[in-house]
Image (cartoon, helix red, strand yellow):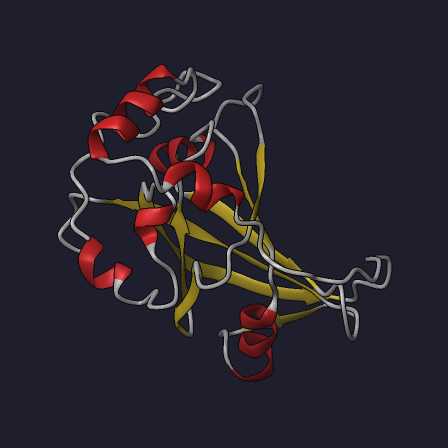
Length: 195
């Protein structure tokens, strides 16, 4: 049933790139810390950088748990499910980092996402994941569901923000600069956008 892969290429890469949604899971080191699981979507906000490196855009939201956990320990798992076509689940276990707007690598990474306008979504960071273990499994119990389209609500909400107002929004949110468990989250004030 399950198989381990040495790299993300061929049919595995095609499967990952075709999915309209994926999930991220992170956790703090503390045994009683809050495990975080987040759905990610928006066409064009995810890329395979090379055979062992993936990246996705981290947009404005109410929390910054993934960023906080990556800053503390770097552990992350990404998961894709086949909701259409043959059953399949792919997990990439690895080490991740948040590349923030003031990082010298940010602009080059952002260029890898040509199909999305980051100004519409309150871009906070690019999350880069270095795969350490890549596995698939059957997915027999995953239901068939149809993808219709991306929601436009996120872009409508955050397109009206500029760097200053976005920083103010994040500052007002309880769990942006600090995680649910008190870990450092998104560094504020938000560095100016370079796009």
